[in-house]
Image (tube, rainbow, N blue to C red; front, side):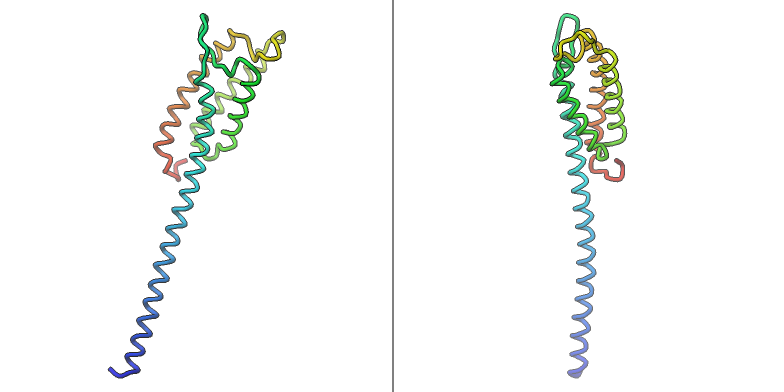
Length: 166
């Protein structure tokens, strides 16, 4: 092998090595991009479910009376407004929550808001959202929604990494 052939062999092997290295680098960057994309999506989904869990926390705080239990956020406008604001935050993040879960949250909202609007007593103090009997009645229904939403969130958490499914 003369000098020219050796030089050609060295240059061509260097070029081939550079091409292979470039192709491998491009493939790894595509994989990294995909991983980063999934990481961002999963973080957004976690954030949305955290907002939903804050809403569900309102459905954990109840007061027991002789007539039955009712949720504390139904007791005053201030607490109800806080609950309403948290539900709105969850809805704004709803695109990251599974369709079944956000639909169930919507059903709960569609139950409670008309109830408050139509059955609101005019003679209540400015602090009360509804009378005690109505709070107890509403809490029974909301308890069912809470249980269903908790179960849906549990299932969703097990499938959180399945990006194509949500």
